[in-house]
Image (tube, rainbow, N blue to C red; front, top):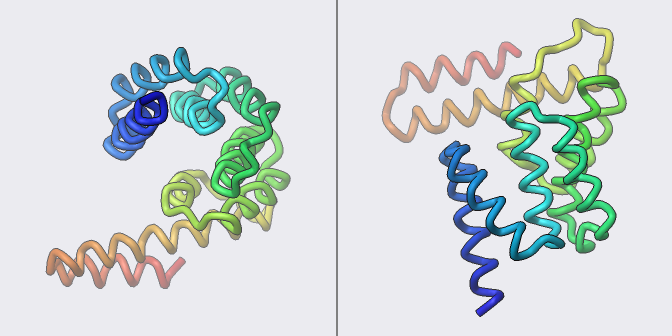
Amino acid sequence: NKKKNLLSYMALIEFFKINESQNELDHFLAESLKKYPENVKLLLSQSESYWNKKEYKKSKNYLNKAYKLGLDFNSINLAKFYEISGLLLSLKKPEEAASLLKKSLDLVNSDRLRYKLSLLSKSGGKFKETDKIITESLAVKNLNQAKEFFKTRSYELALSSAVRAVDI
């Protein structure tokens, strides 16, 4: 029964992440962490949630808690750890952040991370690796949009998105 409750929390948390329902996400993260305070996946989700709300200090605290527990020796958790660490580091050291973000993408090629990267601004050549990852992410985002437009038979929008991806 305890395993079932944890899986239910995980499913609800993923659902609210995808639907960008921050209030519900916050509620279920807080409730689940009370019951499972040493669950690495929950700690990483909480860290990511704080990152999204620009509460970077809290994000780092939860990231450190997950790291101290060993990340459950799981490549998905490790990729998420690299992702959040890279995003936090991008605030101060963009070039070092690029290597962590690249490690995350090498472990798990995440459209969600690519979307986050596409929202970051480029440095104008100052940080080549960071700019390369951001540019790549913008192209992937536009190609994914083109695919969605094509599925809904919005061919002009699909072509426009595809051209934007190629122009990057």
